[in-house]
Image 1 (cartoon, rainbow, N blue to C red):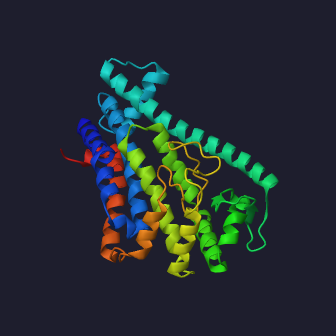
Image 2: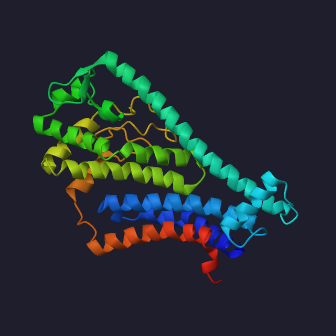
Image 3: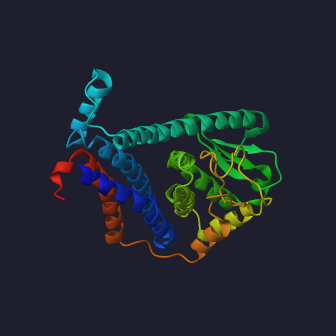
Length: 328
């Protein structure tokens, strides 16, 4: 089982450093953002599983040749006062590190969720006082502000799209439809769940390149997905003009309730990030992508990426659960 821990450690290193750097520099994700999103999720999940698994397997190696057997033996030591002589200091350290890292990741995920819920609740209370329902679209409210602003606030049945009256005055009806379609895509495709997970990943491991690059990439990819969905119903020049108008907002502005780069509220979006914050896709990049469209990845390419993503998840799982099947 010791060789499985070495393999997991090597995989964790690859997924923590070269893999996210290479993917962040690749150009193909803009051609198939959904496929790229799958790969980023696989890298993050497989990386975390490999990090924890490498320490866990190495720590349990003196107790058993398999993970279930090692966990049973460890349980007998902890809860049944069994002999612990087989475990050395470094094995105990590895097991403790695996437990602490796993607990830290789960705790940070829950803490990030609680903070987001608190921010959204406070934000929704403010909207109740400062906004009025939009006569043009259901599930949309308008705030009295001269700057062009558009974002959405998830909340299940209480999800709402927020526009400023300054934006409404500047947009033509078709352009307003484009903005609403963009924001509704964020809600219907539940992009806030993705951003919550990657914000928690970065908050838990801010020193890890995977967490920073993944959060930045996912923010860009959801904007591409929302733009692509809007293009199914509106003309490209209409969407481009709407992006330009929203981008004309005051420089340095940020989404309401945002806590900062590492802990930005995943529930808040802008139709076009006039002040592209950390991880946000700049309007110029969105416009450039729309003006110079590239063909999507061929079916074979998308299939290969999805298959590779599945393999990334399957490999650490197999190394953890059935190391005896691998001959080293």
